[in-house]
Length: 346
Ligand SMILES: *[C@@H]1O[C@H](CO)[C@@H](O)[C@H](O)[C@H]1NC(C)=O
Ligand SMILES: *[C@@H]1O[C@H](CO)[C@@H](O)[C@H](O)[C@H]1NC(C)=O
Image 1 (cartoon, rainbow, N blue to C red):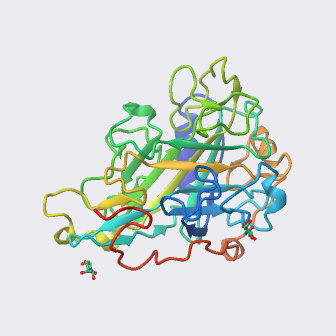
Image 2 (image 1 turned 30 degrees about the vertical axis):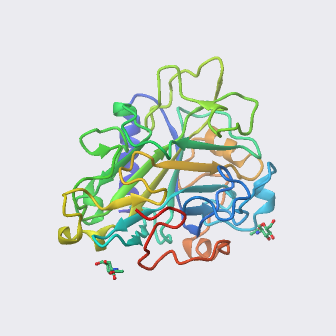
């Protein structure tokens, strides 16, 4: 069962006619906190709540240094990956206007992680991409977006409504099937939870570790955004260096919130991003690179696949789950809240 998902994924990738290198592994939650070293460095608290996974060097400010040397442990599968990955959280809004945080659940075939994120690094084949440099970071999405980005089968942010337990038996090819994947929150209850997917650009300017909006140093290929695993498109002259496609999956355990009698009386759906977005179009992701030495380059060059890679080592979730970052902003995140933390009532 563990391998079924991956083999199906490998088939899907092979069907596209090229040999893809694709790491896919779980990272448990390392913290839930209201800090954001990328968009609001030093801001305590930041504007909205995040769920964070990866290394324990995560902090309100993160220097442009080799993060793998600052962190001592990681919640990710590969011991060598001390990166940080984070997104907004999802909350349920009750009819009386109170909010409750929706927990993450473990993605299929990942094992006993503590919620968290499933992370992918994809390349068109061995030796086709340049791994990130120490200090590299980037952002994708638009927290202010409330309408479709109109990317069709190449959408970079999507949700899938899992129609039954075990993810409704349909976990493959995120963001590529407009019948299954939507840029907005699903409009009906999802008995198996809701999967969020966030996909980052695959071209880099080759020089900058960051940029003022945390996006301009990376770009989409000339043919437009590259959807999941379709990563062989050409990069523009301004951003000539092909980088691994970073991609997050989060499964939100909405099962406790599926009673339609508790959903808004006007028929709308009740979920909202911690940024205050009730549509879901504003989903976004943050990344700070932190692999040790050249280990990510090694993985991308050597046909590593799924959660295994010759030359790298892995840890079990029993150990990974012990890695934690102390919460900086101490506030109630899990009770019924009169407002989203950091957001105005309304
Ligand atoms: C985070 O930064 C603060 C202030 O610079 C520091 O005191 C604290 O030890 C840091 N925490 C971690 C986990 O590095
Ligand atoms: C609001 O509704 C929720 C869900 O029904 C309930 O658990 C909570 O206690 C209510 N809060 C208030 C302040 O009435």
